[in-house]
Length: 273
Image (cartoon, rainbow, N blue to C red):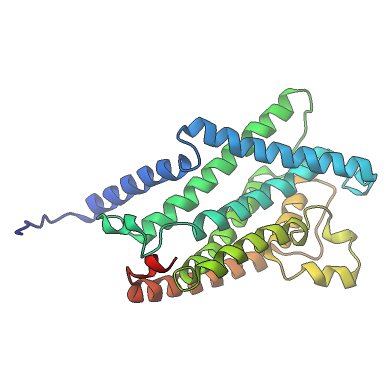
């Protein structure tokens, strides 16, 4: 009944939040499997299978010659890694605990911590899986070279950022229409299998096809990442700044929507689902 409030400094409060985010990240990583190693292996296998499937498909269709001059598997992996990082971030953030989640009843847990931990857990799994695959590919004798690795990693981070932005907007809508968000998330992830442009490069597309993909920020990010990965490819029709501005805009919209939803959240919403 009676509680004594303790005054905390800004540094102490920040450390408490960081510790809470850390434990929430561990919980998010283990959400698909009780063992964190198995969660990593599952994600690693998903990436490896997708890379292998696209390699076989390109080989059977005779499209390897249409790729960039350079390591063909690196060409495939630049598209797969960026795509997976983006769609996984969308799924992780849109599936984070909202204002009506039972976890929000436990102080000092809040929606910002839930969103941050889900997003960082997704990024951790994708980056670790990517480095394991690249290290294994390099060690078996394929001494590939990434022309500008820092900028290429920057494009991966931008794909994660825009994925978090899309997921945040969906998270704000989710308490109002959970069925729509679930369906839209699935359609968005599947549509980007083609709309992301990971199977071709923008410079080779005719104008009438370019306008079909130019709206998609992920299309710009993947094409720019290949420009940083290959010395002989210079993207002419894509711009990473476009994707960054779209991400900033969606983050602002998502934060406003999440704040509005949190203010009007009702515990009875959970009973309707």
